[in-house]
Length: 457
Image 1: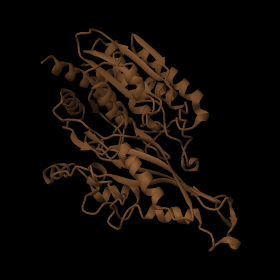
Image 2 (image 1 turned 90 degrees about the vertical axis):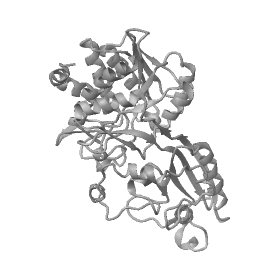
Image 3 (image 1 turned 60 degrees about the vertical axis):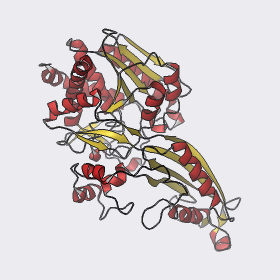
Image 4 (image 1 turned 30 degrees about the horizontal axis):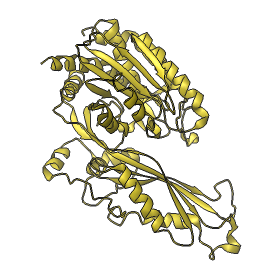
């Protein structure tokens, strides 16, 4: 692959413009008004695969958004890599905090700014271009399959069923995923663990209509006040989650492993500076890296109710709402936790209000063994491009479908991410450094080379 760098250099402008075409489609899976955009994005991916050299690419329906499947089978006796990615993106709110339109990609300070620039359009697009290079130059050493879904940001509710129905179609030796990050641009890392997830919407109802806060304030429970207190009581002063049985299945990580995890480069002062906070917080007795990697957490992702428009309106609201999530560590069952939270939160509600908890989505955690041939291949690929051996890390994030792949398909996944903490995924001004984008396109072909070599042994 001596011409890999030159191929990227000669085609970099085209690589960017094609990615921008993908980004410009507002494929927000959580908003029903973007249903047509989901189909349009799937069609874009189908054409992308075919132009890159896939022998077959098709849009396959599910009960929700379609899956785009593609493949290049050069020899059935060779190993097969299945690439997983997602083409849906998060909503863009609050829009007024964006410095440029979220679906009109703009390059500033060496970074692509747009929704999906990193998560996951930018990172998934690297695979399309790496695949294109290998096919066009005759360097593809194994079979490749693509499985691109449109519902990851809403918990992949239909992909597990689709996998079960198409188990033979997606049969592979390893699943390759780029939907995670690296410690720093000069410190490559491979994600070896993901936290699971449970997510709910909570509705608190007080009086049967909005009331005048002067005539009724102090005499009738305010749902927003009640909800705020209930949320505050979910954790204690030490950051310990108070749901009964919540920690029952949490496996304690040994001090030996905690020591090894602590060797990963991490500058607490830089971390605080990057997100503009004076001090960090979390479960007592654990470092920031441990709190986000090996321990579960609970957060309110949104809360609303009453009057939030311009000016004042003296109203005691009838209802209050919140969206609450927990990140779970491997061995915690998301369905068990989901039920525990629902039962607990509804049981502690005072009689002055009614509380309803609706589970939205969830998924299990995942751990990748570092002795897998695919892990070793990824390790060598990063080292080839970054001139440093990557550090294994456990991510605080969740990709619920990864554990489903192992359960339904019996295939392990290797997480080769190129995103950075500063990329602001899920937030206004999401971005992706051009250097990381092109480094990803360069690194992925080496994974194929080393993986094919290792599978021959």
